[in-house]
Length: 302
Ligand SMILES: NC(=O)c1ccc[n+]([C@@H]2O[C@H](COP(=O)([O-])OP(=O)(O)OC[C@H]3O[C@@H](n4cnc5c(N)ncnc54)[C@H](OP(=O)(O)O)[C@@H]3O)[C@@H](O)[C@H]2O)c1
Image (cartoon, rainbow, N blue to C red; front, side, top):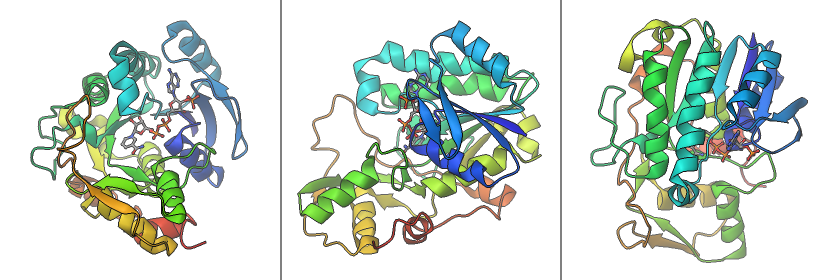
C-alpha cells in the first residue's frame, strides 16, 4: 500500500515514519513547514489550509490510504487562535477526506473531545469538549464517521509519551530534563488520562490503516475507535513512572491541582478512554504499561 502521513514531522508522525520504515508499505510524508528527511523519507511541506496546494500535493501522492495526524496540537495555540485551530484541525480534514474518495482515511483524534466528567469513555458516548483544541478536533469527526465514499475511520488517542524523534522536545523530554537537573516541575495529580507510548500508538494506527477490518464500512459511532494505554494515571503519576524507569529522583516533582491552575480554559478531570473495542478487534496490538512502553522505545535508564 502507498500511505500518506500528514503531520509527519510531529511527535506521532515521526514514530509513524519509523514504524513504516521496516514494512512493505510505501510512504508519502507531509509536514506544515518542516522540510527534510526522516527515516529515509523526504518530508514535503503542504499547508493544509491552502486547499489548492493540498489538492495538487494529493494528486502527486496518489495514496491508497491516508493517516491524517497533522494538527495544531498545542492547547494554548488553539485557544489563542480559534479560527486557525478550526481551519487546520477541522476544515482541512474535510478537504482531505473528499480527496480521499474510495480510499482509506484514518482521522487521528483525541481523548480531549470529552468533558472529563466521568472517564472510561466508550466510542458511543457524547463528546463535549471543554477547549478550543478539543472542539476543533471534535468538529473534524462527523464528516469522517458519516462519509460514504471513503473508507474512513476516527481513531481517538489518549495522551502520548516518549522521546521526541525530531529534536523538538516534548512533555517526556522536558520532564526528564527537569528531573535530571533537580528543577521543580509541577504536574497535576487530579487530571487523569490513559497514556500510551508513541511507538505503540504509531503501530496501532499503522495496523488499523492497513487492515481489512469491518468498522471501515460500518456507520456513525461504530466508525470510531479508542486507542490508549492500559493504565489510568495522573500527570504526576506519569512523571513518577518516568523518573523510576530513568533511575532519576522524584524530589523535584511537585503535586499540582488543575483546579488551582490559572488557565484560560477549564481542564477536563478524567478523559480516560475505554479501549475494549480496539482490544477486541486487534488483540495482537502492543498495549504496554508505561515501563514497558519506555523500554520498547529505548527510553529506559541511559
Ligand atoms: N500528543 C498527544 O499527546 C496527542 C494525544 C491525543 C491525540 N493527539 C493527536 O495526534 C496527532 C499528532 O499529534 P502530535 O503530538 O504528533 O502533534 P505535533 O507534534 O504538534 O505535530 C503536529 C504536526 O502537524 C503539522 N501541522 C501543523 N499545522 C499544520 C498546517 N497548517 N498544515 C500542515 N501541517 C500542519 C506539523 O508540521 P510542522 O512540524 O511543519 O509544523 C506537525 O507535523 C494530532 O492530530 C493530535 O491531535 C496527540
